[in-house]
Length: 95
Image (cartoon, rainbow, N blue to C red; front, side, top):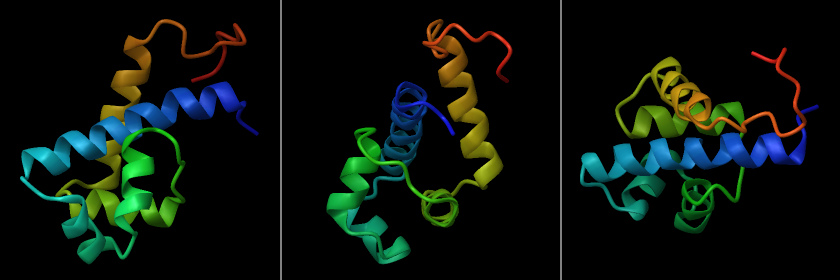
């Protein structure tokens, strides 16, 4: 199981990617609700990195902002690799 530190550090880029793409499409959080059925409050928590959505919700979010899930995950991976201290426990063997 991923450590809380790892979940926070990946959750923030997930939210950042989702929010950036939503804004690029000029969508409001309420419009994402209409597309995903996730409440605007839950979408806000995801965008702020305070909630980790399920795989099903990630699929819905990616589709709602016009991305394939793999493209969203690729952007998240790029953002986490840019942060030198992603693996706060010092384990350099993780992908």
